[in-house]
Length: 490
Image 1 (cartoon, rainbow, N blue to C red):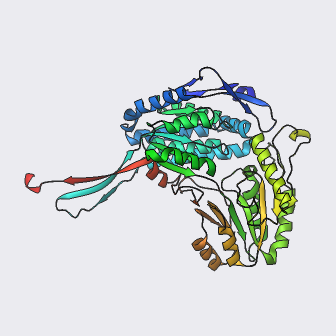
Image 2 (cartoon, rainbow, N blue to C red):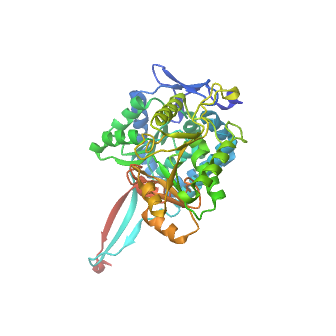
């Protein structure tokens, strides 16, 4: 099935076709589930970037002058094709990430729903009409395309990540160059083929492969790029911001998280522990919205800890639909997590469960880590505010609600959060005081929806939001229009 589904070599997508870089260098793509070579990725360079940007610039006028309803209809058709071919892309995502086909199908369905949402927004695409203080003058605000957009995506939810940025950008009349993650290189190429089949004109959407320091930097340094949208690590986000800030490029950064999951003494502990497990370990903990800090009232701490450990023990690791979590994405990430755990132990952190690489049987060559729960992590621990991006979470004991909120806010990040309580006063105070872009009450820390904005505060981003209608504010420029008329000339 892998031979039929996944190509042996992966190329750029430029001018509506797959193009190999010259001189023909390739980067290996390893299957995280078994450590074997899955494919070879063409190694992009400055010439490839120039080619893609030139095409995007050349086609911009044609695309932005295409009626928005026509653009929306293409997005709708692409979403229909996503639904029809969901099994095909789910297999690709499964092979690239090691997540189960079941999870990949759910991700694909979410990507299609995002497309339908933005296709619907094409029928509205609201500007604003308002009054003027001047006589015989009307005033309005209209949306206009920004221009050539560079979209840089992570690996963790590949088809959702592509849809998340591509759909609103295209709807607004921009041309798009998407830098693929080298861990999930074929998903955006497959998506590009879907867009072509849906009727997207040639040159509007390109995909670049290669290393970030080579292709990514060349893309960011190209003065024809008008907008950059990046999802990934705080470290890379800072570098991108520094690189493009002097040109005042429109920039969206959705960065890391160290998200708190607060359990109060009146919570439904069974439900809370279920949501804590899924928040910490689903997708192998490779979510910017994962619950990496579980904050529990002292009066229920021991009971909740026992429940959490028992449920973690029952998690199944593997790549089948009956498993709960798969591998981390590559060996470098695996070693980063294991090194951080070893350092944490030296600092006095206690590993309650897990903390090691799975190497027996089917796990022998893959990048699997046992679900890990830590204790005795203090705010001074190196691991406390470090986003590991893996199946690792820590338990923290607090005396009361006030201390819980204080600890929850004691992070350089502020992406998502959750609180479990049946006390409405606590709910309202948590919403008011938590420093996070997303709050979940009696639910998980993850689970964004297409029509709602997602993003964080502090070091979790630069204040922009995707998706929702808020994304349209980022992917379009606002133009204020005044129209003066002469009543005597009627």
